[in-house]
Length: 360
Image (cartoon, rainbow, N blue to C red):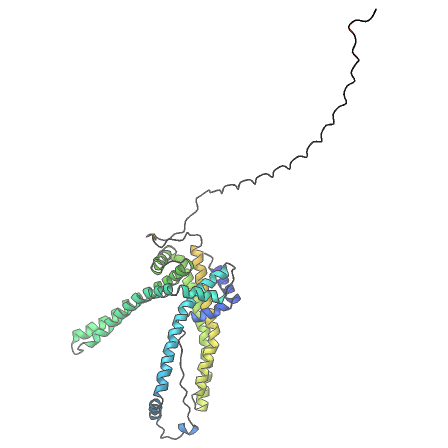
């Protein structure tokens, strides 16, 4: 598989069609709203050594309790709406990358239409894959917490608690990390089976597992490449956020006011919106092109009867020569012009009759 070619094509598509940046930003899954509380205070509120900040906050909360409840309800509804939109954006982004790859029009409304059409399938895939992972994580967390609820005066209980914690740290966490990686790749492939191949959710997960087993090497190499690119993007984002954050912290110390740090947070969010959207669209595009590369020559597996063995694309027979195309029919001959009529020949002159006997 041409890994470099896939990455270059994905970057070219994302840079050419900037509507994908919006889908990449919304499909990130972590676009939650953050509310900032603005306290309008006078300049003398922070002066004097007898200022009780806790009492002032409690008094402000009691006075504006209705406003706080309204803002909290708005933030909850906003977060719920963004979560719904993020699932639709994920499916729409997959569809638009395919449209761009096949030189068809890339339209935002078409992306939203496809995203909401397959919203239920994408959500069910995420739920079915994440739920067992969460349950297993809760089991490991219980194994770490429950031993500490015993009587630590007993040496046996203390030893059991220590063994439980060590066992979870040594065995449980690596297992969770491995399962998390597998679940992440299955989600990538299953979502594309659902959107690009119109396969139901459970069948998409089953076919994603078959594809992962049969093309594990290609998938692992692409995952490592994208992991390295993700580290590079994380370092870049950290440099941007750190520079602005340090400037805001210095400003807060110099002015003795929280305003500079609030401004710094807003600037960090604004500075990272566009890069985050580009990076999200790029990652989704890479995996969409990878999926097409791995399954492009394969016949779509039917949802009713998926094979139990590894999903392998069909191999064309050896020495196959396509039949020659039929010869085109010869054009009909034009009708020949009619022959001109032959003029009648002149009658031959007839000899006068002779008598049988001549007179004597």
